Length: 271
Image (cartoon, rainbow, N blue to C red):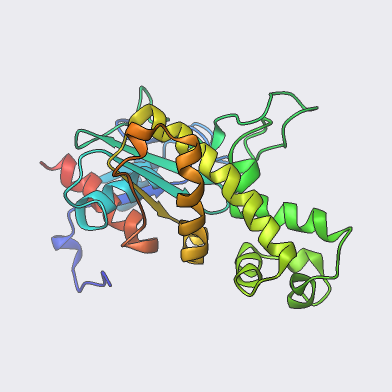
């Protein structure tokens, strides 16, 4: 979609989206919960040294949200909440047309807000090392873990057949596909997923009062079963004044939203 024929002389620079808290001003990656080895990593400096080009680095979901605001589903809106549902859950926040990045680039790490009591005895373990995080309950990885746990006591399901009798082969995509075909086991898993997802998004919406919520990532490809189910539950947890006229839609740019947003980082740098 965005393939171009360009020489090095015509390239403005390199934009990079990173799956973790990243300081856009310094280009330092604070950490990546699901990718070890990037603690306090000076990614911008290293890439500039290697390429001899201008480099701008930002959080991947922040980039994705910027991309949607610039050329995607968020065109025309000034108050946007971007949610990326994948291995984890990422967030991007635009208020009055400006990205909210926080003091050191760690704003909108929504996947790590706590929805269960802290401590080993209470919440599920998250990839960040803490317990009770939102993404430990309704990311694709969390859904797969929950499915495998339930399959240990119930293998009389369509999902079991789809996975060839091997619970380690279960995927979030398979759970949603089986649910669409009416499998009760998977319908309950989807209900579990949607309930936690709706509560988390409603909590954020109640604070930010966005005009639009744009959802991307692999789980967003589930389609109507995800978005209709989410809308059906959101009103229960969201204040009426905030839920009224609130749009909840899928990403328009898909996986390329982050690429577009990384380009936006360079555009802002050169503005």
